[in-house]
Amino acid sequence: MFSVLIHELAHVYLASKLDFKVDYIELFPFGGVAKLDGLIGTEPFNEIKIAVIGPIINFLLAFVLIFIKEYLFENQIIVLFIKTNMILAFINLLPLLPLDGAEYLELYYL
Image (cartoon, rainbow, N blue to C red; front, side, top):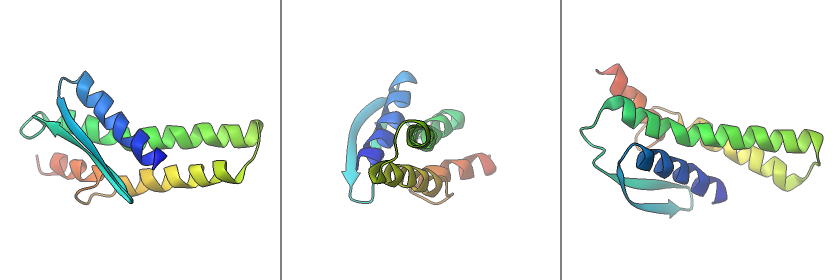
């Protein structure tokens, strides 16, 4: 759940920086969703930026954890977090709704 929360907070942070109103974040056992107001009908590149930041954060977190594992200490929990973040990032890049990768379909049809 920690990785999902960080993922959703990344969406919320960038959305607020792009002047979108964040209604709320819902966390579920297998994922989460950040409800943003005013996203529909906006510039497609803003939607894509907001969508892609979640998987990017998961990749960055995984790489930081790989560094920690290799150079500081190895722990089974760190290995679990690395796997979790990589899986979360790759699954979210699939071009299927409601995953983040579905935003790429919008560019394809423009």
